[in-house]
Image 1 (cartoon, rainbow, N blue to C red):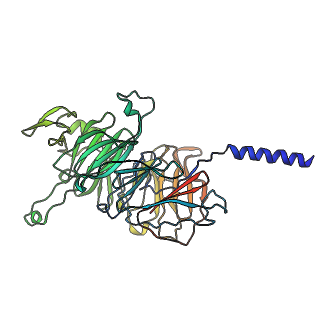
Image 2 (cartoon, rainbow, N blue to C red):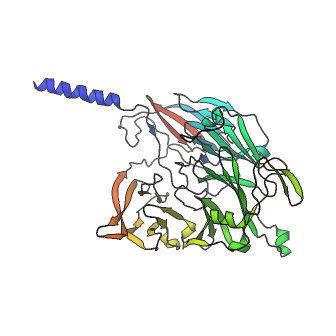
Image 3 (tube, rainbow, N blue to C red):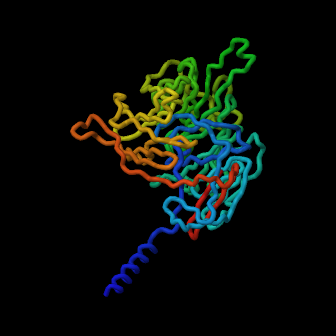
Length: 462
């Protein structure tokens, strides 16, 4: 009787195991600067062919901290008996595909991009296969940045092609392209401008509005010697996607905002940053309504400054039609180390690091309405590692906060204090501990490897 019960239980365990998904992926969490979801920012590894460090785009939770790209990454390649979180000690890995690249490597949604997005490889099958390869082009026309756009659910679109994923790409010679993510065919193209060099793509509103940021204007040595100052720091071009429609191009001028070091857009908020650590927020909608000189439509004839042309076509491009001539209404300001600043939670809270170097690694979680510190709102983690810890609001809008260190991940939650609904507290929901190998078996720059273990697939890049 006992053996029969044991056999029945064993059979049930086997049935449950058979129903578990066999195509799960090991997807390591990324820092807030490198996070891809839900904005679908392509993960880039800066290589020898890149143009150096680039500031990070605004994050989904409103973080506006500029970061630096990594030019070399160390990758530990698992061998016999290598283990990962959630897998048994006996798990073995087999290297089925390896490649190298001198230019940045990007990965998104089962696709690996090489040679500045010119070549696309699918990693869905047991071994990667090439999806497409676009024609070679001069370095002056290469793709410098890209975002993945996916069809919105429930929307009726004008063309059947619009229901498939697209790569929105920015080229070195100021063209904005929409490229089929499966064939590499160019579906749309817009010429931006000749008066500045556009360089960075990011989502203002994920999957709806994109921001294209120019490189910062630098004053030449001769101009400085002559006492000429460069007051325009950069330009921001804003578009709604599919169909592409222009919101406008705004000029960020130091005469209006003072001696700022950077600016970006996130969720309809213009964020400007100062070397002192000060961060100021302005409503972009209010700026557009107050300072737009002329409404421009793509593909329409336009006369601007004595020159006539078609908006979005070369050589006319798109004029700068939003010029801020007075200080716009200030929404919020805060001082933080390295301009690191995030907004999230319910009700709204923000995360900063006190603006002192000795406070690096200390995070304060405060209420947006009155700047009050939440109970247990100072978060700090002991990190004996070259990697510093990082923290961010979870992008699923649940109000949870994720604090990641070298060997643990803390999931925090924001909740009301009992009998005091006006104040909130931070409490620990749960902790994930990670076992890390101390040995780095091999160091490779800009390498992408594809590992398999049965039907499961794993990826590593460095």
